Length: 403
Image (cartoon, rainbow, N blue to C red; front, side, top):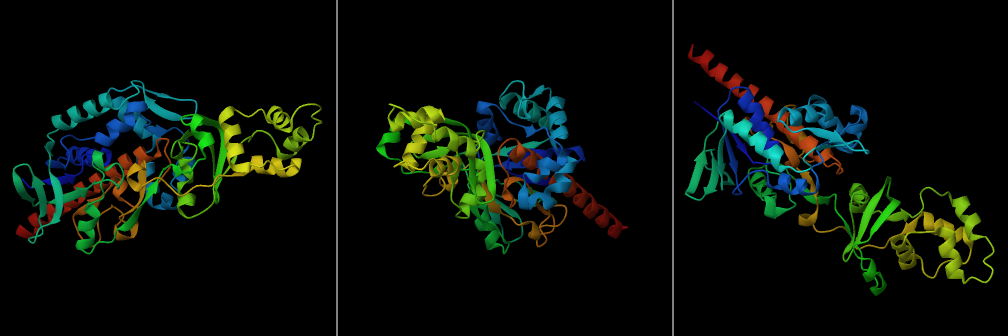
């Protein structure tokens, strides 16, 4: 019996395997690491954010330029479907105040374990320690395994090889070299959902690890209200990650330290007579900033402007001098990968019939908050279903030809 091959054991690959198995295909899953789902398990250590429960239009908008390409896939497997899928695996979920959906267990291991039990029960053949090395001369797929080189000749292949961040967990982006060698286009990788590097003055050392809460970050046309942590290397956290596309494009970074206070109200506060107070104390009491925010203001606004209107404007748009994004491998995810133009509507490579792509190896990006995982699952399901249909069509065509 001819088989379907899935390369990559992350969420997209496992979902593709699920779709193929559900269609009655024999499925072999090849994973370079000793076990599958490593990045998923890492993401679940601090609470696995499965998706965000919001209406489909708002949900799709989070994918920005890639939204039109992903729309049908997200409509087929969006927030409601993710919730039903997790609960169908025996994992109860709950929705947080921000709309984010989590498994009640608040970790990935029970979900992954239940999923693998389901897939193994359906007949999935898992082969770990199999690293893909490109296409062999005869058109087969070449692997390096613990038992030596191996070549697979599947009826259909789904590539789900990830992006290029967190290489130690399996997403090293090396596959792009093999794609390019085969004449297939791959957009250069770039960090996404990454922190920014800041060369702090020595005065900031005491605030390393401190959170900046209830502030609004802006860069280019993007803005996001949230929290970031002051680290020894810069700023990181969910408040700043969504601005990565603008920062990557070279736009400046500013922060509104008091987003709930208007600029006019700030001017009024700063214009009050200070009596016998020092100017520094008067400003501190007028602003009532948290220590970390106060430190950030002093880091990037000293000497503080004398004119209240000028100081208020600075507080509402404090320029944060930085030296760029954290390195690619330290980013939560990556931009770049296989462009949608190289794929048909079913995510099959136009120049390699029978080869489909899914997950983070596609050229899209999205903010954290459940969007990344949902799109990986949705594209994996979409590629798996279309791969199964293509395989069935090929088999039917052969039988017709023999008849």
